[in-house]
Image (cartoon, rainbow, N blue to C red; front, side, top):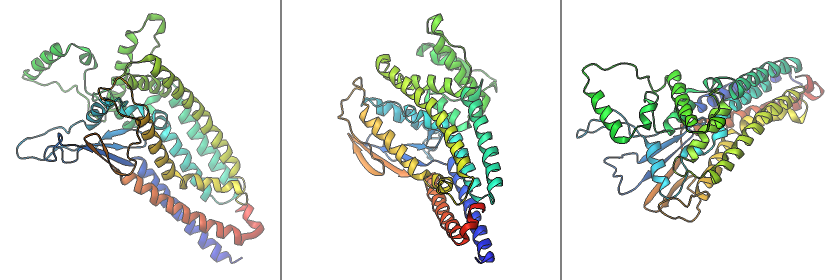
Length: 393
């Protein structure tokens, strides 16, 4: 074996893997896909992007920008998440927040686990590779456990996740939650009086203020709990498991308050979340075993999983679109037969034209997958030429 050539291959595949990791990390914070609705009653002059939303790994965000116009001065973009929810509910479709609740809740831990896999893949030597695995997966396990089960664990999630939850409630972080429950006439009068005040208070939090977002979620949760019988109430813990379960139930019931239909869905997603928690721990344990020897077939799991991220994202996206189109509620104002929404390209639903295309995040995922694949091929050649010495490499 040519040691110089082997060292060169070792450097190249490690550099490619690190570059792929950077791209994958960037993809997490970028929208992976976007969807837009256009229709005659949403003219392009007023809605240049249509009703547009962005699918991130951890949330669904508003895709509408502030319109630039000489006729009307806008200071705030249209809330297109709420607008699309409103449109969809007329045909019996559940709110956007109802899709992928478990995936969004566990997304940072899954990406962190994938990152540790890639780092273990490039670590030279059996025991250094095992050490990276134990430390890395151990950190992910502690973080995930504290977030999923611990008090105020939701605060260990991303700001986008919190923001997405608040936005799906039809609010922003600065809204007074108590005001949302007032009679509309009383609320309008209160808002009018507030606007007439000479001096404005500066108590409203910025949209990305984590403390304000969590406080908003807590206030909404406690209002909902106050409507239950005393023996059915549960105090706020702020764990991801509690917040995700409550928020999912609230999302399902936003337009269609049917406990007999919604409660089983909540129970199913809660079970899925619990199973996924233990599954992630099991996968990390297996990945530690896979790191023992570069000569074993299991070693390749460490790079195959990161390579599969864009495929997994697309499968999840298509699967949830299928669920939306095949879980139409009879309480909708209009009746549609179950259908498959457009995954990629342009489609037509009633008078609306749908546009569904990959965004920057998906491109970054695909680029990362290509680099991971190249790194795997170079590493495979290096190990093949190493012969019996491959097990210790």
